[in-house]
Length: 126
Image (tube, rainbow, N blue to C red; front, side, top):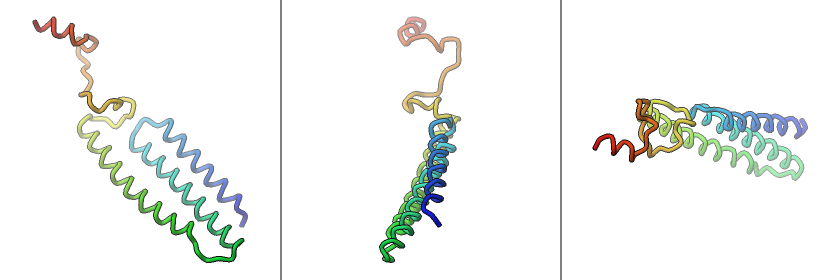
């Protein structure tokens, strides 16, 4: 098997994940896209390890060992990331990334005075 096939497949997976990160609004889908990108890297690591071990006649398999470490780190990353997304969803009521620009702000006020500045609100209460 040629090295081109897994390399092209991993490039397609990586591009699909990159599109998902850039185009999606939902935080869970962004995390899934990051995982897709990590799997593309894992496929490249294993493919190049097999290709280089055939060329050098060695059985070190360092690419496969790095892939196992990457899978372990990705599992921890998705667990922590999903916990953060769930905590933000409980506090804010949404996981839309565009609506979560600044986490220090409270929920948006949709009342009639939502466009008023702080000075105008202070004058109105005085």
